[in-house]
Image (cartoon, rainbow, N blue to C red):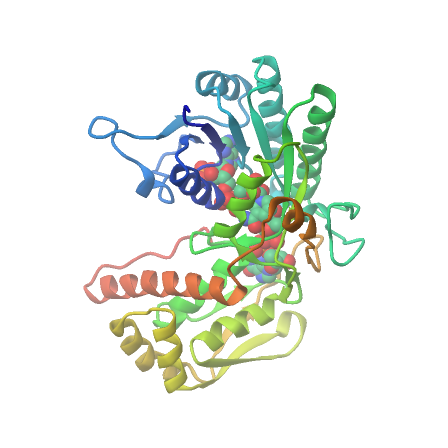
Length: 394
Ligand code: NDP
Ligand code: GDR
């Protein structure tokens, strides 16, 4: 049997990189669309690349952009994929308030361009399409928990663009008999989550603070609650959605929700530290009130941190007792907020046999291990006289 061919838009993003790795492990030939940029933007997938001059590869990249219909059509014509995973998006909710039109161009019309290309190229009977829909569609939630039947009420230009993408996917399925499906995915994170999303901002920020590289993390709304899973589990669900006999839409979620404040507390506990929140609204602060060195040691060993990291942290963290390490900055408040998301993935469990394997604890362990190692490397460079500048993107 010839190998299956997949095309992933957004392959350089968090989900694209996990999905590419997963499909390659299943023997797929994987093609991805990457944007031209003035600096390399393939850090998350570099480990998958093989120089075709030197060895055989199943992994190919094509320049492209979802704003460019001709380009989308010509890549699909060249690749003739069995499966398209449309993951490309301006995916940051807060940024969508600053760039609403651009967000609609990619997240709404970009999806239309993919669907229409498949139709115009006569690939309807060959190519299955996965659309990256989102729990942001529920926005101002109409029921708790949310499942496939819960009405949508988006609260951002991102959510509004994604609702168009959701319905145009359903419409192409019903109008043209296309195998086009929505995965309505609740938040999922990983060590390679973008650094401006709240979980990564916290694990990265705490790691830098605990090595003495930063003093504080500035956050927005600490009251929001999210249903956080691990990207590694969620991309397996995307794959399963396209392996069903009939096209359909599925919620993927963990069924547990956690407040932002609680996520901070949990991360600190993993490092033997206790954080107490005092004040309200913009005056709220998270103060590091206690460190249990034995616990710090034990927890770090559990997550697999190296001896050097444990030694450095043991020395540093004591100096932080009594210091405010979290502060609220209203700059991160959104014009409209999604207060709570909590998904019910019963349909995915029953029909796809999909269930998340990694817990929130596992997720935090993975993220902290990665970020502690990254911060330690930065500290070592600093000690050798090489300053590592802070990114201005955060
Ligand atoms: P990321 O932001 O990490 O990745 C987005 C990808 O889209 C990147 O590869 C990015 O390229 C690419 N992209 C952005 N704009 C364009 C464009 N104009 N043309 C082509 N490619 C573009 O997102 P995630 O991996 O977290 O999410 C994947 C998808 O799933 C997105 O559609 C997101 O909206 C959706 N989603 C995500 C959830 C989550 O919790 N992660 C939950 C539910 C839905 P570059 O690297 O060059 O910026
Ligand atoms: P979200 O993720 O908006 O749910 O979208 P994000 O991590 O950006 O925000 C989650 C919640 O945390 C609050 N928050 C902050 N958020 C950010 N980014 N930075 C902060 O400093 C901060 N402080 C508090 C937010 O207000 C929000 O309530 C993600 C994206 O991956 C989308 O593409 C995807 O569709 C949804 O998840 C499901």
